[in-house]
Length: 347
View 1 (cartoon, rainbow, N blue to C red):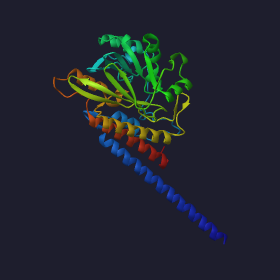
View 2: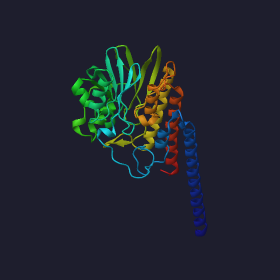
View 3: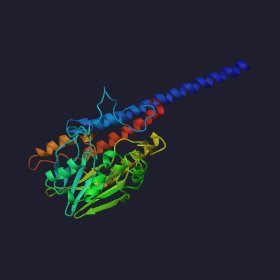
View 4: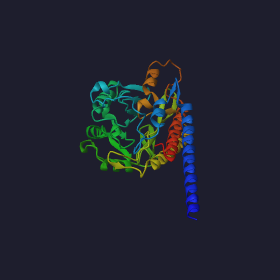
């Protein structure tokens, strides 16, 4: 009898092991199917989303709290605060939009939206770049930095807001961020001297109107608890376009000493839902122009060069509805792959 029980128990263990292995294999195959969908739209010479694909479509390291990028090949130098490492010239992109962010290597976009009643900045980059890139950059572009009225801070990471206190103190610019991310700043381990005073709290669907221009802000959690994403009206001669700016890239469960979500799976599911929701809103609104918070994500500098050499009557290099669609596909399919890898035990 005892032998029979042992035999049955062993059979159950064997079958359980086979089932677990089968489920893991199925999940791994599911992950690869999602990766294939992302890969299919991630690259062509004039349509490059490869940086996002490489950063998002790799299994997470054990214990990872964020999707932090592609595996590093060899040693990586620390980010330098010296101007040679981050300086970039200002660039006019549309009649009412300028790029005043960092170089491709430093990888921090800042956009200036000009209106009939002043300037709205989209993010502020770092404390050590703000004077040269924003104050002096706007002047070089023929604009007056004293006309900065609002700064939309898309999430509570230093690359978005470390320059904001200077703008708040120097130009009395109003800062806008979600309540959740204002709270992140309060709790974070970031240097206290770089934290701005809490100002305007963004709400979902909030209309930010300055003069003849209205931006629409949406709360899209997942990168941080209260990441903002924004629709930006754009002018190109007599043509009107609508910019689509997703306020983050990788899902994160914690950062800078602050927990965002209970686990990575929750962070990714939240971010996927936010991306799809913002995409649907943007699509219905007619968004046709991708604006990136990091220039490497969409090869912004290649597009800036194309704008500089654009011939009269030629299509605008930034206007491309298909790019928005494919970027959403890469982002969501790569995170679905991450979730499948979690199920398979590959993460």
